[in-house]
Length: 204
Image 1 (cartoon, rainbow, N blue to C red):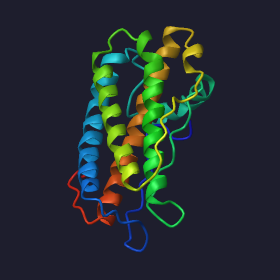
Image 2: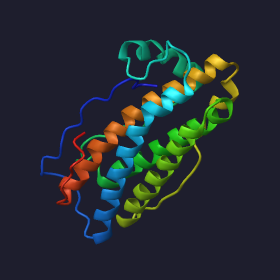
Image 3: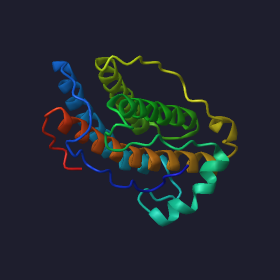
Image 4: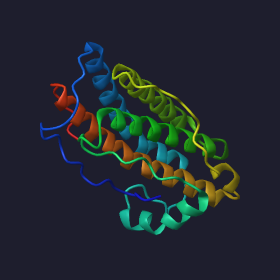
């Protein structure tokens, strides 16, 4: 897992590259997605607190989370797709597809650990919001006339959860990476909104 604990700032849209979408519903999908990713990010700390009982697994501890990168490799947790500012070599379709694939990845990782966790009420609600966000992203993909194919992520995580500690670490690392990826989604959606003339008030 290449990125744990924080996300690097994304360059904002410069106005020189990108793609405009004329479909009026596209703006609604962008706004819905911005609201949902804000909801997801707000829910992560509470979900982490309810699911993770190990005092050494701290959500926003960059140093400690970097030390756990070897565990991500051992558990088979893939890195999230890269998100960056729109450009000729990173089109709107590519950006949306990476968002969709990343959300599907984290949904599947959380599904793998969910049966092994004691308190899953907050996790279930978070997974519902991730699913709903994925639906909005896929609507945007269709609006740019891209084919949407939803396939489960191929991961060996479930088979590697041999004990409670592995379950705790897997859940922790997934939430850490989801938080980082979610922050990148916020920036990317702001980028897309600027390209298409929308105003973003998320503040993230």
